[in-house]
Length: 572
Image 1 (cartoon, rainbow, N blue to C red):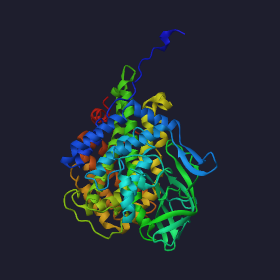
Image 2 (spheres, rainbow, N blue to C red):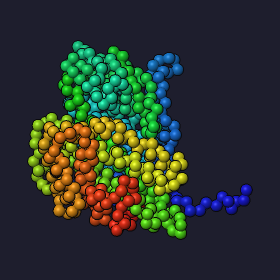
Image 3 (tube, rainbow, N blue to C red):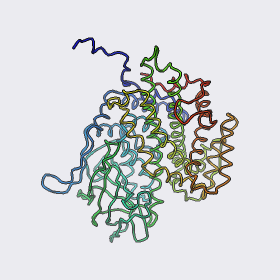
Image 4 (spheres, one colour):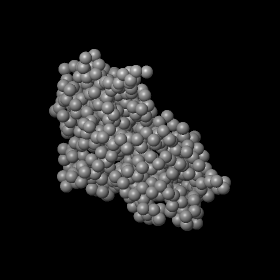
C-alpha cells in the first residue's frame, strides 16, 4: 500500500499537556471570588499543580487503564479462607493516591476548605470520575462521625489525612483511611425506612452486631462504612470497620460487584452481615436518618460537582476539536451554527460550575460556624441575613443549603447527559470511538442523577423544605434578590416563580417543574452577578426569556457567541 495514503491531515491533536484548573475560567474565578485573599495564592498553587497533573498524558492514561481493567472480586484466598477483597488495577490506586494527597478528603475545619476541595474535586474528576466515589464518601462521612465524638476522635483525622494507604489494617495503625456507605436494600431502594437489617445490642455500650443484606455498598474496599440498621429504638446509624482493633477481619461478606453502565473503574457491591458483624453506634438509637443526612447532603453536592466536571471536560473537548478541525472551507469553530452549539453547551457548563462552587462557599460559612448538620433541617433556628447575599451569616447559609442542595442536585445532574451527548456529536464519528474518551464520559453522565437519591427524591425533598422550613425559601429568595434589576428577563422569571410558589395546590405532581424553575432562576441570578455580560445575556435569553429551543444550538443569533466559546476553550 502506498505510504501517501497514511498521511494524517485535518485531525485535532489530543487535549493533553494543559492545566485543567487555570484553563477553566469559570472555576478559577469562582475560587478567587469565594476564598479569602490570604488563602488565594496557596490555593491557586495547589489547584494548578493538580490541574497540570490532571491534564497530563500520564494521568489521562491512568484513567483509561482503570476503566479498561475494572475491579475484580476475590471472595477467598488460595487456602479457602474468606477474605472478601476487591482487586483494582494499579492505575486506580495511583489516581486515588493523587486525589487524597491533593486534600480532596480534607475540607472540614480547614479555612476555605470546602471551596478548595470542591474545585479540586471538579478538576480531578475530569481525568477519571470513578475514583471520586471513595473520595466523596470519605469527605462526606465527617459530619456523621461528629455525632459520636469518641469515634470522631479516631476516624476523623484518618479521613482528613492526605495519605492514601490501600492495605486493610486497624485504623489506629494507618496514616489515612477511606470510608464508604451502605444504606439501600433490595426491598426498599431510596425508602430507607423500609430497611430490614437488624442491629442487636451487645453488653458494651454502643456496640452491636448486625444481620442483613445491603443492595448497594459504595466503595467496598474502604476501611469502614456508615450503615443504617434497625435497632430496638428504630433505624440507627452505625460504623462498621473492615478490620477490628485486634487485627482480625470483621464479618463483611461481599456477595458480588455490580456490573454497571458506566463508572467501570469503581466497585459497587452487595454485602452481607451474618449476625456476628461488629458495629459501633453513631448518634442516638432511632435517629439514624438524621445522623446520616449530613453525609448524604455532602455527597449530593459532590454529585453536582461531578456532573459539572463531566460537562466541563466534554465541552472542553468539543471546543478543542472544533478549533482545529476544518470543514467546508474553514475551521468548525468559526462556523455560525457550530459556534451556536458550542456556546449553548458552554452556558450549561458554566452555570453548573458557578452554582456548585457557590454551595461549596456556603459550606465553608457553616463549617466555620462549627456546624455541619444543616442537611437535616431540624435545628429549628431561623436565618437572619447579615448582608446582601447572606454569605457572612452562617444561619443564612445553612438555610440556603437546605433547599439549594436538592435543587442543584436535581437540575445539574439531569443536564449532564444531554450536554455530554451533544458535545460528543461535535466530534462526529471521532467522538463515537472509544479512544476519544467521549463514550466514557457519556456512560458516566447519568450516574449522578441516580445516586444519592434520584430526580423524584430530590424534587420531593424541595417540596418538603418549602412546606416545613420557611427560612430556607427566604434564604434562596434573598440570594436571587441580590441580582434583581440587572436583567429584565431574570426579573420576569423571579416574578413568575413567586406566583408559582404562592399556590401550592397539587405541588407534588409539579415538583419537578418547580424545582427546575428554582434552579434556572438561581443559576441566572448567579451568572448575572458574576459571569461576563455575554454569558449572562445568553443564559437569560435562552433559559429565562424563552428565546431558545429544546435542542442545543438554538441561541438567538444576535448574541455575541464568539466570546462565550472562547471563554470555554482550554488553552494548551
